[in-house]
Length: 471
Ligand SMILES: Cc1ncc(COP(=O)(O)O)c(C=O)c1O
Image (cartoon, rainbow, N blue to C red; front, side, top):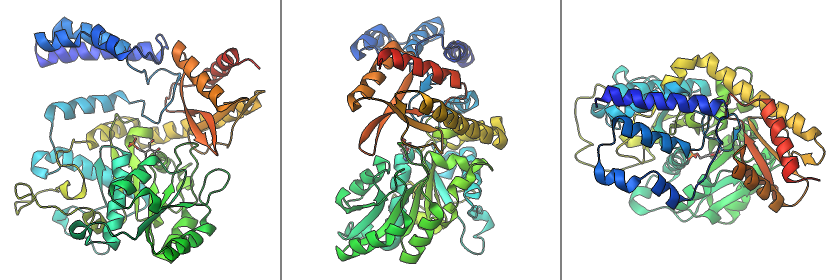
């Protein structure tokens, strides 16, 4: 079998899979026990025999696809993972085959050019100065910079390393100073506390910022927390704001937070992993008003930009700060050479690095900026409509009105009941949603990622929940 013949088989099977998923012809989720799947997929036999190609490949793929979680199913309502645009999937295949590990330019000039372009496109959306190419020389005044990484968690860590590099550049030689602190609301994604742990700052040095009833930072309280940290003998070097929060999808007031951070000389990091995608929409970008005051932000294209996993951007207002995040020697990589392009190696944890930009670029070029904006607007509007609908149902309530495409709600009853409802829905495979804790209570949670989800899907969901948990 040639590559083209096998690729035809794969695209034929995926096409059927897409149609089946979109038509809700199969369960959105089906979790067979892992031992059974290892058996059913005949993994040991295929590994021993080899030759997984042609119709044998088709058979394997059909069984594999039967046990996937179907993100294209209109009742996929669970996690903030993109329902990928097929053009993005094709780009993943191109990257898989070319395998240009482009952290150094010589290992992937085209991939590096795409990443450079995509980062500059994002920098411009944030309101920062895009980066000139090194061959154009450094533009007068500061310009932004960035790098694509494998996920928002790694991106958050990278941004906080850049922040640490600004206050404690000697860290790479002497270790993390014991007096550093981070300010962040409890609503922050867990990757922030984890980054503090990885950096050796420790979870206890993450000072919780007071929040309002929606879990949003109260900017007027920032100076007080900063003073408390100082009184404890700590140097708060970074403040993390959410745009938007993971649990309920609300945006922190970035303009006021930015002003407070400037007054205090604290690095502002905006975690826009999910919500920075609103920047593409002229209607919604006001939710991020003030983001240009930040020092760094992260933006996951593999969440709301229809891009296959993974493609996360770390963006900084001043490119030189990102260069300060890392400091390593590797004689086989870092040496003087002809530089027709850019090495991203200095800006990232990773050494071998996939050409992540292509999968986002392919979606951007297929849907166009306008198409992406319309998608983000549609998903937010649907969340607002679902909020109105669910709030009207007797026995149902929502903790906050959504600002993004995330909606939390609960049914009258205990936290255990919410979990039991989710389990029952998953068991039948009709709807797949997640849950989140907010304000000390457990909520059912919908992330409207799928452009095929409609309000009828939500009405059907409510009906099924009534059958599972009659009042
Ligand atoms: C606000 C926020 N930050 C960071 C992350 C982590 O991103 P990733 O899952 O790509 O590591 C998430 C994931 O849901 C998130 O919602």
